[in-house]
Length: 278
Image: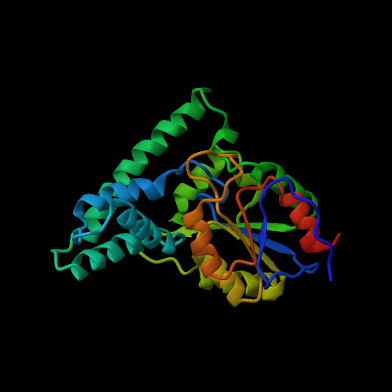
């Protein structure tokens, strides 16, 4: 048995949760989990997909929006080509000519890069603070983990050099040292499971020493698969620090097997005490 502390915001536990005092390594996804530079990306992708998606008579816009957003977020954590490939399959299933996944990827990335450049410029010119684009409470939580001697790792589906550049821009890179991993520019695949397996082997630890935080189902599923504890961050894509869980993310993350779901890191220190029992 363990006592449940008082939280200031919503924290959702599933029956699989149990304290893990043996935790020694914490893995974070990057976009939407630590960085808010790409916030709004699911809706941006939806706006790209929607004009190309055939409508069935009687189908409402709300139904289409919820369905496509669910499909987009179900692949959150994988390289973007997985989402554009999936959308091409959905269009084909409705009897229409499939768009080119590669062309969709290029169009989406161009639109997203423009948004990221604008937000980066806000930071560099002092019109926005770095913490405006760090998920609420994350920096303080990283300080607390670092102070306890816990090893921190970033594992992202975004191209690795971009993750490193953006982590440096947000003054987050120093928490992770050499342990920042992302996908390769010349590859459409990143196996987070392979990276996690290598991490366990190199660090000479077992899965139950692992705690992960992520806003995508991929890292949640693999953490549970390895015997680790998975905390889902259902971060708000529209209002950083709202304290509200994104309902679409929450649904996908629970389906992936999350042990805990939080909206941001406002209660992370209290949650960590509960997990570590110290």
